[in-house]
Length: 162
Image (cartoon, rainbow, N blue to C red):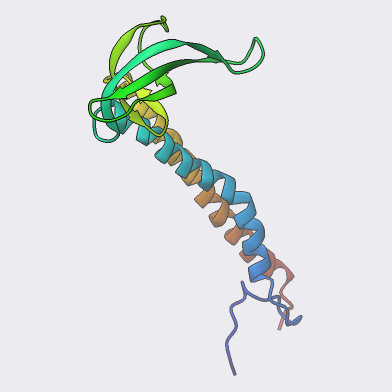
């Protein structure tokens, strides 16, 4: 007689609910896992560019603030990036320390359409990024663990006595 996992089927009914439950758990966990990946790669790229590990080296000249909508929306500092060699890129977002003063010129690294001033990203910002990434990853994995345990309890509860 073939053994069937009690988690994958409901006893006696002959139906396989394991994939259905896995699908629901995945839909619940997917946002947490997605946020985890986004936090690691988006913010990790910024940190790496700030510390010279990635991006194109050059200078950026600030052109002013770009208003992103209403009065409560944050404004972003904009500038024109000129690499050490090659053609410049106008209208890039600028992440820097200090005020966004027109015609201010500073060294920067261009990565993904944003010019980062060297050292503008602090270690505390990196640690916060890593901790939030780990938190979202653990929340996604805990969803699977809780769901699996919940399914096991349900199968035990509804199992017919032999």
